[in-house]
Image 1 (cartoon, rainbow, N blue to C red):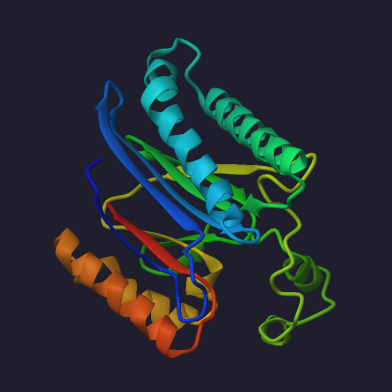
Image 2: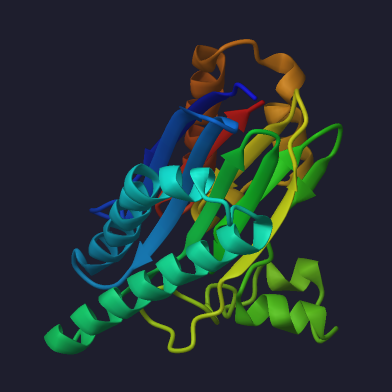
Length: 255
């Protein structure tokens, strides 16, 4: 299935560096159009967050170019096989970043939210609190935040409204490069024509309501990538006007 893409990333109004990193990869294959879209939100002092997010982007880029073609052609190609190879990739990247941190006595890590599209199927990969939404007539969140506050909401200890101002809202339970026994959540679904997939860092989604996301990014409004790029840029500017202090990233995929 063909798709349109757009993105925008910004260091925000406070930070000197942008530790977010993005990836957009597309190709044609024997199973139709293939795409890999990734948003990583790095964390760590100085340039360490950039190193963590950049390492994951580089690793996933390499996987797309060097491993995915043979996976698609393999007789073993299946949902389970895709799941297994993605799990293996993220565990390897986790060990690599953790090893670097231990060798250099620093703590660094990154979130990962990824969308892999193969013909009319999609696979989601989630570690941390960046997010993936889809608009298909309504706004749906396809990922779960792996945060302390999300757990508290799940347990009924705090409401969604209370969570918005809770000082623990940025405490991650899972982080590539900083979590031993990393829990990578992989899911799948069916792609339909006319959908909008939205990948974003927490700096983006913290300052926008679900209603705003739906109205501003409803796929029916967009017929080309320039329109999508303009909207991504204007939304990032809006988030900055609302005094978001984190890096801000959005990646759009319209089917």
